Image (cartoon, rainbow, N blue to C red; front, top):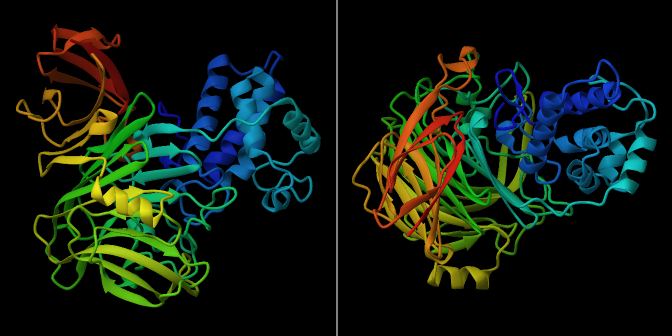
Amino acid sequence: KPDGTVFHHSTAYASAYGNNAMLMSALVYRLLHGTRFALSEQAGANIKQALLTLRFMAGKYHVPMGVSGRWPFSGPALYDTAPGFAYLADALDDPELGAAFARLWNPHDPAVQATYPHCGARIWWSDSPGEIPFLLDAAERWQPEPDPTGHRAYPYAAMNVHRRDDWVASVRGWSKYVWNYESSAAENRYGRYSSYGMVQVFSQGNPVNAADSGYREPGWDWLRPPGTTVIRVPLEALNTSSVIDRQYTQDPFVGGVSLQGHNGVWAMRFADPYYEKSFAFRKSAFFVDGTTVCIGTGITNADTDHTTETIIYQTALGTLPERFPVDETLTTQWLIDPVGNGYYFPQPRQVQVLAHHQQSMHNSARSQTEGDFALAWIDHGAAPTDAGYVYAIRPGTSAAAMEHYAAAPDFALLQSDALAHIVDFPASHITGYVLFEPSDTIGHGPLRGVSIPCLVMTRQEGEKLVVAVADPDLRMDETGPDGEPGGLSTLRVTLDPVWRLAEAPDNATVIDTHTVEIICRDGASYEMVFGR
């Protein structure tokens, strides 16, 4: 897709089919390179984009659950894919791909050794004779890159990914064009809630991995994926004989914007069309440097039999803490999960904290599982009306750091309602906007008006203002997999008149010095520069 995601079964698939398809595409490209059967330069560029997208999404080897298809705990997908980077780097003589391969390649890692037990085609035609000597030579040729950093929006996956140091955070939703989850008769039977705004942080392990970051299947509560807003129905309600997977909402507003490839905003406007038709909410996540601000508004449903919750974290415990079990209501403005991620609550209302031994089911629904977990969630009660929340995530922190952060948080919430979520980060000179509706009366920061629902992020750099905009609506002709590639939209953006346009992309039309119309497509981000 234009954003670099690989599609299988009409969605972004970063494990199994997707990553193995890119491995084999790179191998075929290299085998045919220099012959009359050679693939085009554009084909090579497409494969490169897809490989680098997979590498940016992953916490080195593990990809987020929301793009793992019907294997929610799929394991280290990029172990299998690593040779593809070397194949394409060799064919294109590409140092960026070569450095990416060298970072992923570690023949002394037991998991890498288990991936290559012998030469044999296996189901996806990898591990051909001669592969290991080639990879060892490639590892000598290229020097490893540092861990990637930055922010990317992937509109065709309804997902944003944010990286700093060696940790990675992701958030994923579903929409009119991106389906919710995939299951089969014996796979991912309880996966419904993984697309309800799941925020997944990989921050622990050497290398960073899912299990050490708290994501382990034994005992996993499928009703409480972190970051999601869900109705706590009985577990077996997710596993009925008529499981509805690969479904779409009727709302196209899910996606993100990326500013200078470094920070970004994601948002989702949701109304449940299948499971509980009264269930609706609007949520967002603002990623700036080491902080992720999560916001939810308009949380509403008519289910009087079950509570509605926003899940802060669910973390598997490797060893039991001194205080265990725990079942209490948070009385401070912050807490830290067992793997070192901090959470700050400007108004800590009904934040429940639990550490206990819990029983669940394997994703196949064929065996019971159990494990020790720590959890926290916001209890919105049964049948909430216009409920909401605000909290911030700080990966890799300490109690002393969170105490300091709670006394002086790095963000200010400017608006959170049905019309907009707007957050300012004064120290970074960044303001993020989720405009759920068009408006010409925006009164926060430099933005004054937008003509259609959209996402905007601004950063002031002295006398310069960088503005990134995106229309998250992919505007396909039809709902779901039969829709044509994204259509066009016109987004008019008006700034405070003190700002005057200095630079704009080719798809922009200048209306006046502080008003610009952008032709948007594919949920992509577009940047402009203003001066004063």
